[in-house]
Every structure is written in structure tokens, then in C-alpha cells.
Length: 141
Image (tube, rainbow, N blue to C red):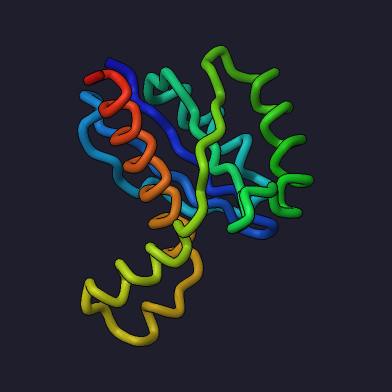
């Protein structure tokens, strides 16, 4: 079975997460400079089979898209032209807050908690885990 790759696209940095081969567990892959994320994804897909890419959809509390969508949409359109797998959006509300909470609860030191790259990678992992749980619930109906 191929993996699912998740993207938490940011202005400067982009967090990436990936499932295991059985698509049971989501894990952090990397945080890369946003200017290099497409090449990173293409290189990764040469090494590992990926069947789906999930991109965090930035929504506000009122369900409106955030201004970051102006950057994400061109990224997704370009990615769709370069890969032969579906690219889907998935609601990413609260992922940064959940990532910060996860870091706090993990007990890691204060300096490590300030690592924004870690937050981006964990956010991508939360997006992916949430997507997988949502898909399991839909399939079990």
C-alpha cells in the first residue's frame, strides 16, 4: 500500500507528515523552506510510493478561508500538474494550537518548544491523523 503525504503550507516553512505503508499511523517527515517544498515532495515521491497528498485548508472560525489561501492555491495547482496522484484539501483549523499543546504535554524543554519547525511538522501530522480518522469514519458508515 502506498503512503499518504500531508502538507501544512506556510509562508516561510512548510511542515510535512506521512503515513506508514499500511496507512495506520501518521508521523512527522520534515519541515522545509517553502521555496523548496515542491522539489522536496517530488524527490520523496521518487523514493517512496505516495497515493494521495493532503494539504491543510486554512479556514477561520467563521468558516471563511484565510488569507494564506492566496499562497496555497497556486502551490496546489502547480503540485497537481507535477504529480500523478490526487491532491486534496483538509480543514486545518486548530492544528497549530493542538501542535503547541502536544509539545507542552510532551515535556520537552522550553527552548525546544520555541522551535517553529517542530510546530509545523507536528501540525502536518495532526492534519494527516485527523484526515485518516475522518476517512475511517466515513468508510465505516
